Length: 154
Image 1 (cartoon, rainbow, N blue to C red):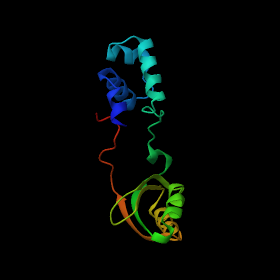
Image 2: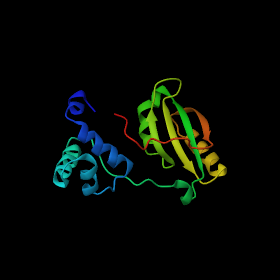
Image 3: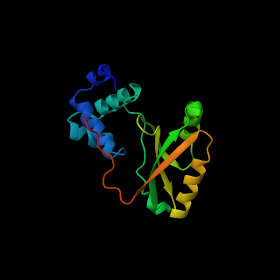
Image 4: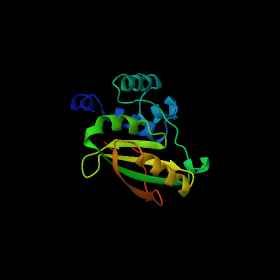
């Protein structure tokens, strides 16, 4: 968010965003009561936040373990310089990755992957390593999620 867009938000906008981040299905009537505005004012503010691109959409919070994904890992990937951008495009669409970040440091990409078992994770790592522009991978097995960002930090 640019400084200009941030300046366009007042305390009530921030409160609305925090409520929607914690539960995107909160009715406008409840938000209005919590924020001290009319329901129509909340509606107008939410639409404005959408138009500004600050509020980009609404998502569901899914318990992935109930879908059989009991294994999570962070995989750091070093790319071959000659195929850097081409490989980035491939990794962005890697089917097992739920998050893909281009980073600075020893590695170029960090991705969070989901698997149903350690065997499936092993296959994912092998598949990732077989991509032509991938030079090296290093895997961090996630034992337990201690905290996930589900709140808004002003």
